[in-house]
Length: 82
Image (cartoon, rainbow, N blue to C red):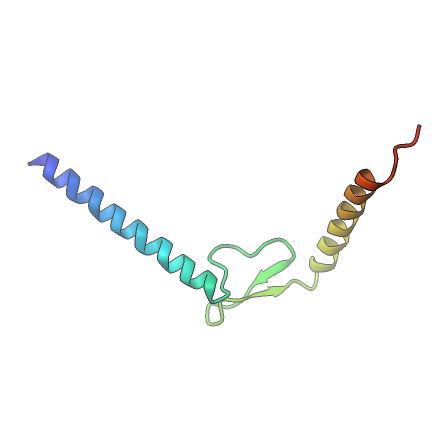
């Protein structure tokens, strides 16, 4: 009897997991974030579900990313000195 209950509980968990994943995929297809917004963005109110650029951190994040891209480019394409 316990085996049947355990099997049903496992089946129920699997169904809930599949529905949750499907809902998250649908939200992502609509352009909504399903978790916290990435660094440089702010979470908007739940009504829109969209992320907004953070006016305080956004420029800093863009500058840091630009420096990182430049350093990678330089490392790849410029000969080493020395």
